[in-house]
Length: 379
Image (cartoon, rainbow, N blue to C red; front, side, top):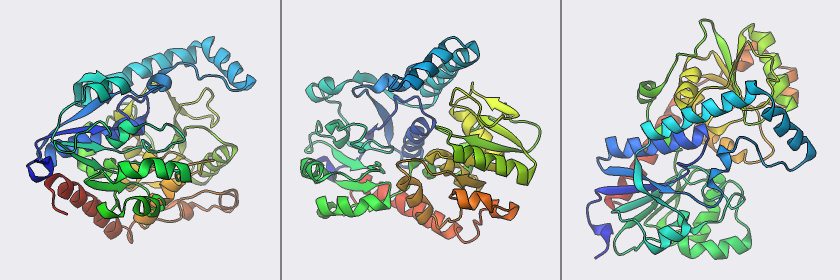
């Protein structure tokens, strides 16, 4: 008999638990905590390590250009960069050990297909596990799961860049196996609906929104918080537009810059340049900020959770993730462009949440309902 008719007790989630990345680890933590506390199941996170999983832990990026090579040499001989990197990695690994309920067995692709784990339900998501620009791995579509024994659910996987025609044909049969199917970004929904209409795909929120502000306060660490108001800056890479935006925000507000710095240089000339910090510091510093400036999806997500005034700097790719989020939450006027920055006034930095509260609570409620129904076979 199929597990879809039985009560789900044991759940295994599959995501990016291996990543040296704030958002990846926090969404992983959020989904497992929500399932354990609210859905009253025993949830653990699969320790699946795909090919190239440890790239994010390298102290030096693989050089693609001569400039990359020079940056690596600069970092190698600059103890002010290398030592903080080593210490930060220890903080990140401590967060994984302390906060993420990892299942005991580690799997590679071969292991998981030959000796698959057992659970009443498997949930994949969130993060860009279905973005074929990064990888094309059927593990993230649960090809190893026996459908007669287990339910399979997709909760908020991100595709980002739409699948090509050839990829559509390849992946469609695996989508149709899902008992419950959702994606994180609205622009990806029509493609998934076309490929797998019978399991009624829908859009749900990123797992970090499943926990309310009070629950995030439980883990937020504020020991690095300055004793004065500040603009929190967090950039995966710093563009000339980002430098311009931060400079303008500093001029308009008169506030100091706190830069949670992931890059070799501090291009903002920040009063507070922080490198040795982890996910709990990340949440705490956003929660206490007066303004936030970022090009990160999850930094934007936590800015919304804490109802912060924030500005988003578009990147060269994957901006539909943030566009979809803003549309679902009915938030506008957070995107920065060169023209907007040039004419920016202090009042333009205010994000008006008064009209968005209903949108936010409704979307989160619908997402929780999807998850509950998926686990209880109520569709």
